Length: 377
Image 1 (cartoon, helix red, strand yellow):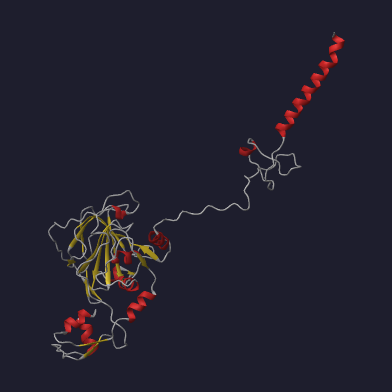
Image 2 (cartoon, one colour; image 1 turned 180 degrees about the vertical axis):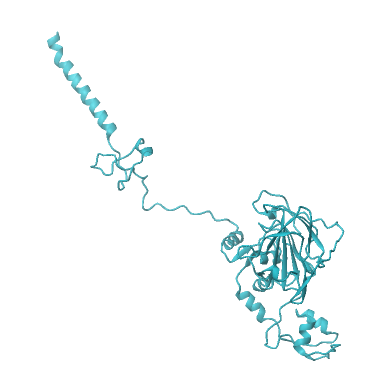
């Protein structure tokens, strides 16, 4: 019996052995993959599954990248269905444009980028009183084709009509009375005759700058319903303006520069002077102390939309100078309001600052100047 069945048992064992060998070989078969050049395998990768650098190389020296066909298309970026909105978003990415946010005024945008607000208005075709709207994209370039076209369309002369006066002609053409008088050598009391042709340009044939101050300062989004949102911009939370406080005007030493009288905006020690990195003076004080208008003018910004300035007030002086008062605890004036030199306009604070202080700036035609050159010694 043993002799009869022994060959059969041997045959079965041989078949089983070859079957196991085949299965083991099948498991060890390296799948067809896309191979790359060998790369260094770090310790964190060495414990993971790796493949050989080539079909003939049995050493595990490289990690194979996932196979990707050369014909594989790159994913198409999502494009908004709102074409106008997409265009405006693209425009805001360029360094020479700005997208208007709620709370902005043309003056605050010009102040933010060190531009003369009149040049900014002209280059964007914006007429006084400088209305801007939320989402509007402003060009910050010093010269644009739209601005040049606008300038060329202005008339250089005017023919007097019945009922005209020197004042009405000047205001109707963006001039002050003194500009019209100077351009035409008019003598007081400035009588005009029907049919008389008046020049609207200076002796060089250039248009006068528009020195008319707007009766009100339009604020972007002021007529819209504002809701508090979680945002990284300070404009999302409107600054509190307390206009019910009685108007106070304080006196002090003054200095006359460029035909204007200036005084120090507050009392305190100057802790940081004007420099290339600091565009004004930092004056230390106590919380709640008075901040005064350094010169007479009109408030053209009162809010906190300019990051880094906290509760900020900007005053327009004679349409040539702007003065700024930053980091206030409370604002006491609003846009469009006319103020006197020495009038209390805010209470000192530390909004957007590391300590209680007033950051005070003076800008001439958009350019920062050293306030010490204007303030009394």
